[in-house]
Length: 377
Image 1: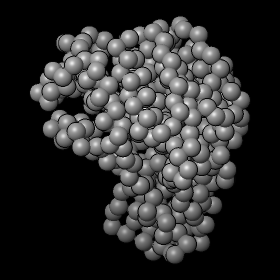
Image 2 (image 1 turned 45 degrees about the horizontal axis):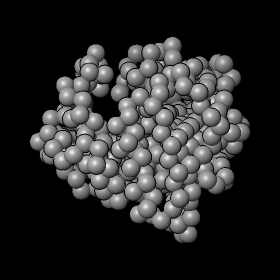
Image 3 (image 1 turned 30 degrees about the vertical axis):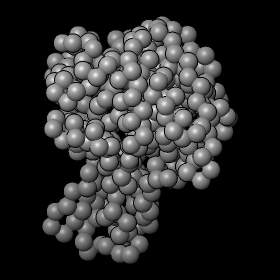
């Protein structure tokens, strides 16, 4: 499945960014320089994370490139929730966007949850961030996108420190690329406050970069949530236990890698910079108060790697309560009943009665096997 960032989302962000910043920072040359600077600060120069070379240029890059490229990431957990009828039915849907920046998560929610059949939707969004100009861009883009879709989106902004500000009751609390920017001791506290603010049928969704350090920090938070019995891990895990198997060694981490189609201007910037041009990469966590799982079946393995083939076999890594191990299908064991295994990709769930034996799960000719795509619309 390929996820698509709507052109009208890109248009709304550009129009709002131009209103706040003017034309100059949105020129291609200026954007490219600022995009590369921000990417370097996130990956190899994190000591400068909060110290861009030019703050106005950095805000333009955040809006015109990173916000647009990242917005549809939220669609994966939203569609997984929808697939389990686990999205609140309340209208307007009350959303808190913590560390909203230029509105990527909220824009993604509005783009994803408008019914293709009826167009009916209504949202009440509280966007919280320390950057007043970023919030101005977010609010303008959300109102523009709402007008384009002819839906009701109420937007309130709050300039505040997300690590300390009070959170009102909400149906969804979302935080995109926020936790990794907080001190380690503040991350679990924010999740606690977000869960306390979330309605019984609601969810907390955290999305982080697909980097080793930021993803492993999210795995550690997952384990802390389980240890303190704060919530149910709805996604991405079919595993309900701690610790996360990715933390057993120093070099493993779990992340998503989904096909994406970017709108024209963002796609061109991605092509030139080689950023966001090879797929939708991120790590995420969805927390809920009830115990409803992502997949209500025994023998459910989340696929946590790309498939890899060798002569006479196909393998991929799966994760479940039985651990993180390779699942293997030998060519001689292929049948019509298990051929779906060969179509499995990262993020899918394999449900099988084949059991772990030592260091792998062997899919036999007699094994029952089903492939599911939890986020498929």
